[in-house]
Amino acid sequence: MGKGLSRTQVFFMTLTCILVVGNMYYNQPLLGILAREFGVTESKVSLVPAFTLIGYALGILFLVPMGDMIERRKLIQGSMTMAGLLAIALPFSPTLGVFCAISCVMGFFNVSQSVLIPFAANLAKPEERGKVVGIVLSGILIGSLMARTLAGFIAQYFGWKTVFIFAGAVSLILSIVSQFVLPMSEPNFKGTYKQLLLSTAKLFRELPTMREAALMGAILFGTFSAFWTTLTFLLEAAPFNYDPKTIGLFGALGMIGALAAPLAGRYADKKGAAATIRMGLYCSMGAFALLALSSTFVAGIVLGVLVLDLGIQVAHISNQSRVFSHAPEYHSRLNTIYIFAYFTGGSLGSYVGSALWSWGQWPAVSLGGLGFCLIATLIFRRGQKNRAAAAKIA
Image 1 (tube, one colour):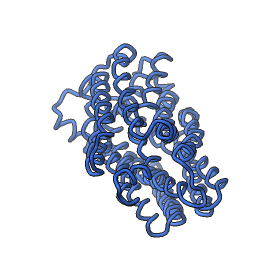
Image 2 (cartoon, rainbow, N blue to C red):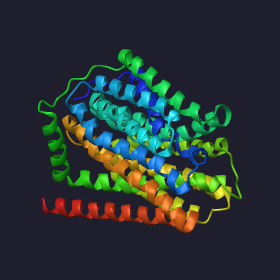
Image 3 (cartoon, rainbow, N blue to C red):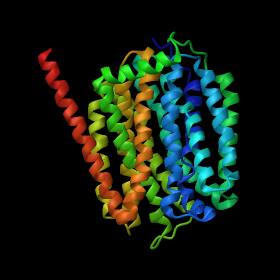
């Protein structure tokens, strides 16, 4: 049972998530600059966010489960230190290939926020778990969007290289401060690292709700990543011709949707996750339908950003509430399964988004996102029917 967290600890966890998760997203509003810096095409520079998310997905798979095996605070500190040093190394990359490689390894170690989520879930009181997880998770959501705004601002006034030096320095500072703020945790898995990974695979096989949540998360974040990767290409071209600072401001719009995460967590505590998941899915489909009609209308894009971020974030927090409804001793491994699928979908979404852009530009990206959200909705409805049928049999 969770003993509860102080407000200071919840605030620090949330702030850490906001600042550290940005390491994976600072590159997105800079893609046009990076393409010119390295002399490559838009299609090739889209590999940067894809490799970053691939590295993160691998880190989720191989590092985050260790939160059930070793002291979590040490794992958080070590991962933040490595990610910070690698972020500082990024501006010194001589080629795009080296930049992608460092981004991938940085993504691998940039998992502290995904260790913090099950950490918070374990320590929170059971009746407050959804609320606390929602608050801390909102840090990841806000950070992923704020990063775009912050990167655009820093690049505009101080140059793109300063963005990554700033990111690395912040990670190193947070690693030091966490020693004094975060509590110690007692690991509850006594086996070997190999047994830990095998038990993670076993949980995936044995829990159908876990598989459904993971697949839905992968699809939804794939559409989200495709949208944000290609939005830069749309906004820096005619008729908009926006600079990086202005493009980054669209991330600030998305933060409004991220603020719904704690509310979704509270609602999931009271009513269950199904209602909020449905709302998130319907909002996401409506947003992509609007965006498909808004390739030259900034008002439609602004409204689409607001509704899409609201939908994706609400569905995400509710999906993750289902994951943490299982026994606390499995939380790190269950979070591993869910977040690995989530960011694997995100990395594929970056690639698919750039391919759709090359094929049919903005309408193709928007209609592709609508189609994938519809698939996620059908998966959820099928799961609901299967659970209802099983309940009748029981």
